[in-house]
Length: 187
Image (cartoon, rainbow, N blue to C red; front, side, top):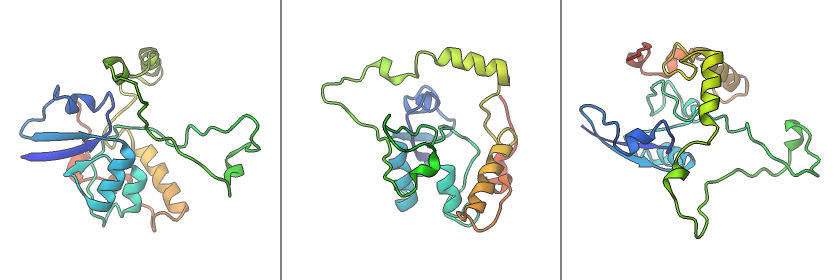
């Protein structure tokens, strides 16, 4: 079976992108691109057989009745609002100060004369120490996939999405995913 997969280029997806990992029974064509482009092209045109999609986009598109089926795999795990920067002399003192203002968002850019090297493709130098610390605090499965290890977080996102009017009714976390993907399997 041939499938196209649009995903961000992360340490967690790179083995699929570079062919180090090859799923059995699939001829997988990985299309690495910025997540904003993936979300737009998938939500608008459904261009790929499979794609990374934000949980918010999935919920708003109609998780139960919409065009997508989700699996409980979370490759990015980045809260996009965790890095808001303001100038030193700004009057912004808390998130409510942003109301009515202008907000820009970061984009990936290429700089003239900058060559990509293997070193630019890997995580930050302090990653190993951070991973070791996370494992000491949370155990070996601190970054779990599947529903069982993520249901509390998912239910919190659903609760906020409902309370903010983004979805018309609360859902159970299990309702978001294809039923056959709900078992927690570790190999």
